[in-house]
Image (cartoon, rainbow, N blue to C red; front, side):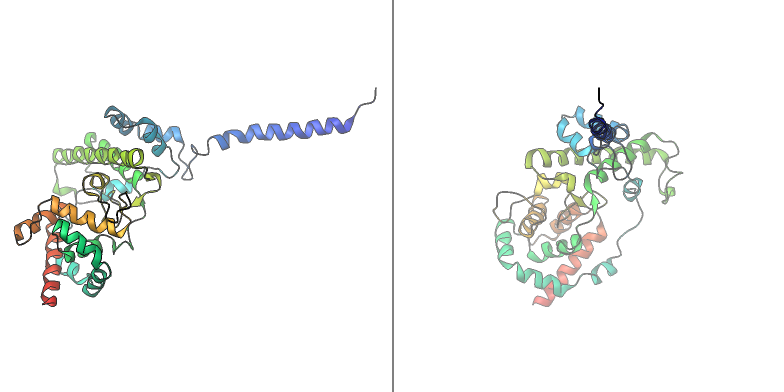
Length: 306
């Protein structure tokens, strides 16, 4: 009997290919699990478990939630926790005002005059106020942020969940801890955890109900996104379809203008009532210096327009 060595070699060759495929299969199968940042899917699950359990207990869609959590871009970063720690820092009103280019504000208003005409008829909010806010928040969309929103909110939730129960939470943080006693800080941590959970619920709704690709949503280190820098909950509460295309897109300028005006109107803006100005803008950004700066620039523009 003559042995066909060529056939054996061919078998061995294909066997080698098969074995190589079996070796590589786990890698391809787990390409979502083995993240570019080195985090495995099961490690992420354990890390975010307390957040996942909290969200599932509140009826968040399981499939949508896990699709966001296991996405390769989703990760934990302690810097998002530290960025959102209570701080004594306050906006310097003088520097704030001088940083706002009035000429650019006026040119922007001119460019979108038709949109502002419609906005003022509906919401009665001065176009100058809306324009100033859009400049301050994102430079008219030029700087909407590069932080991965799901990662930001998950990190805040995990971090402040830990700080609620950590006796050393004040000793290990790089900020002025003298401002708070431990009990006060733990109360703040509970509030921050609740905030992050609520925003994550809204984020998951954005994907499930609106079809928004939140896995590729980027914004600020506090979880805000888009030209007006809305949180996910604000998207639902105040987002408006300004251009009539049937969807709310906060990266669209028409939608951004209408959404900011809607936010201010729903939070109490009333023309000729100066006390309402402060109230509505403070709801947008809970900083007295922010409100003072916005109104100061507004008054300056109005004086120049006379």
